[in-house]
Image (cartoon, rainbow, N blue to C red; front, side, top):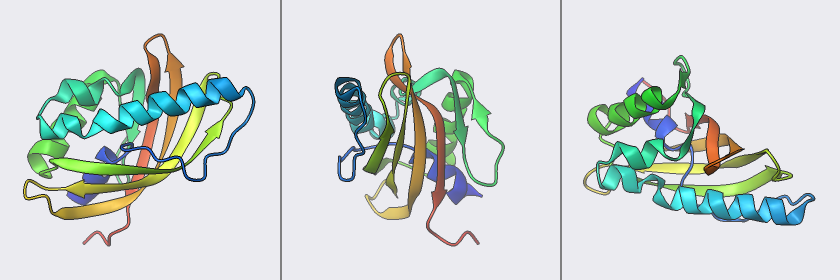
Length: 156
């Protein structure tokens, strides 16, 4: 169960643009891709610095984190709770996102698909998996609206 919750933390990190699907309007999708890459670049900084505010700021106010084998966690308070669970109970201290595709027109929503890795305080890889994130354009820029992920590891 702990590995499953940890997987949720991997919902979205360092962005690469391999396999990006483009649709019109091109400028809107390019803007979304850039903001997603910037958000992903600082996502794990929250764990390195033990600063939940950095983590929570990646999410829309009405976001839901949808970890496997667990009820969805919605809202800013839930995101803060999830951060503490990942940090305190699972020992997440750093990670990596690899975006494999971004789908959509970049107007209101886009979907990011990719892979994630989780590292402990020794810098050791302890979990990895895949994710789908539905990003929403808000008054504060592109934010994660639905964050869904799963581990590639057998949960014992």
